[in-house]
Image 1 (cartoon, rainbow, N blue to C red):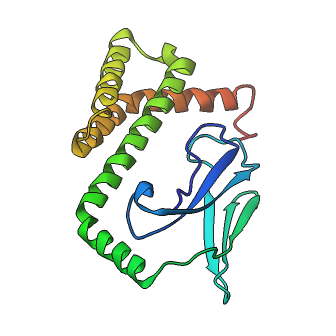
Image 2 (cartoon, rainbow, N blue to C red):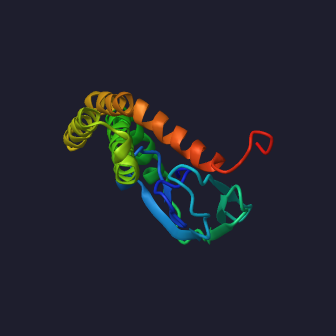
Length: 197
């Protein structure tokens, strides 16, 4: 499994880790290969879309290709079957995936919420650095409080608390985001007539 978006502002490369297994978390699966996709356009976080495809040929050779959709930049790797799994290992992997299914899903959900919390906080930090002047002192305090709460709960293991804290940061920053958008539009239109637009 691989995320399909760049996670950092200006990210120009992505490391792809090819895993084999039935479990939700990387540490419970078998590493097959790693490769890097370079030349991703430096866009805001989430802007670059990466498509990862897997293909197995008749000889059991696995080809993995990662491609950035807007530019077509791609990288690939071929994984030769150096050793296979025994029937017992396959049965054990399937049994473990069923035995730990609920626990694995919860762990994956927690990991995903923690990643989302970090992304939200990083994005907010950049926005505040660039445009804090658009906020009153009281608005800034509300946003700072919401961000501090999110940062604190993201250290724990309560998925629902992290999700609610993310929603609260979103709620507290909606007006700020609207002002930033208005400011960007004004800057883009400055010096242009209505007819030019």
